Image (cartoon, rainbow, N blue to C red; front, side):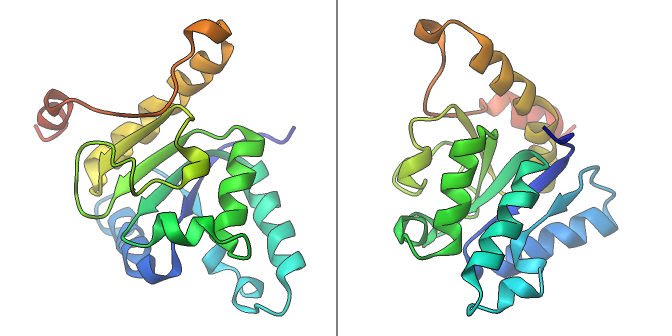
Length: 174
């Protein structure tokens, strides 16, 4: 298995401006994380080559330590469409057992099960409000807890989406 050290940002194409905002955070505020996303690939813009796009998505996800999935108004519906690249990303995330941090674009601090792609609902995951400090905190802390959970006895494994208590948000704002 390849060394996984990157963060993959997954999102519905309608939420591209939020991804660009994350790029601005990285450049302007020194947020310490690196990410790749499929929408940045030239070939990903060519819908006439879905096999190539899916192969490259899988390659990138295979080198991914964690995923930030931007949860917008249409994420769940788009991920349910078997022909969408978001659907392929979700199924590959499940296949490769990659930890997922859901970033709620509506800034909700809790898990919103009705917005999360169905294929990811039963998996141990973390939901946060969309913002640089809390996303960084989740990326720094959640993946190791996810892997510890995978290694625990099956009857004691956590499932479903979790979220941080208000005290975590308060702590990181200091």
